[in-house]
Length: 192
View 1 (cartoon, rainbow, N blue to C red):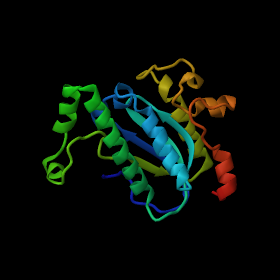
View 2: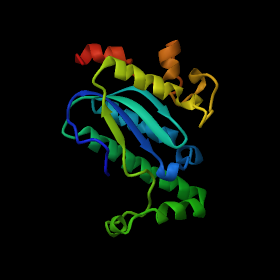
View 3: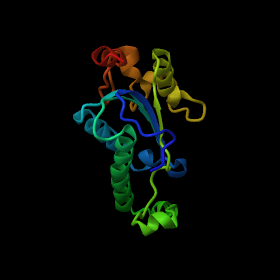
View 4: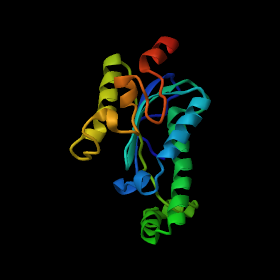
C-alpha cells in the first residue's frame, strides 16, 4: 500500500491516519471498532505502545510509540489495515449488503485485481508522521481528541464523551474501552 512518508525503522512516536474507502463509515456500518482495538493489542504484543487514538466511523488517528523491529512502521500499518479489511469484508458479507459489497469490489484497480485483490476497504495511502518535538505530539493529541467534536462530524459535545478515543484517559484519568500508555511515560521509558 502506498504511503505519504518513506519507510522508517526508527524508534519514535508516530502520528498515523488511515481512512475507509471513499470515506464510507465502514467502522460504524459493520460495528468494526473492535478490529482496531485488536490491531492495537497486536501492536502492544510486539512491543509498541498506543499513546493516543480516536476511531471515527470512517477513519482512524493514532499515536504509536514504535520500537525498532524487523518491520518498518509503514509495514506494521499496512499489515494491520490488511487484516482489518478481511474482517470488515466478512462482516459485510454476513450482513448481506450487496450494494456495499459491490461498491468495494468496484473500487479495485485492474492491476490489483490481477494480483487477487477482491475488495477495497481503505484508501491506498496512510499518513505516517514522525513526531519530533513534544509540541508536535501535543498538537496531534489535541487534534485526535477534538476530532469527534469537529463541525463536520458533531459526534459529541464534550471530547471525553466519545468512547472510541483516549480523550477521557488524558482529561479524566479513566479510559473508556481501551487503556493507552500516557505519552509522558513512554517518553520517560524510551528517552525520546
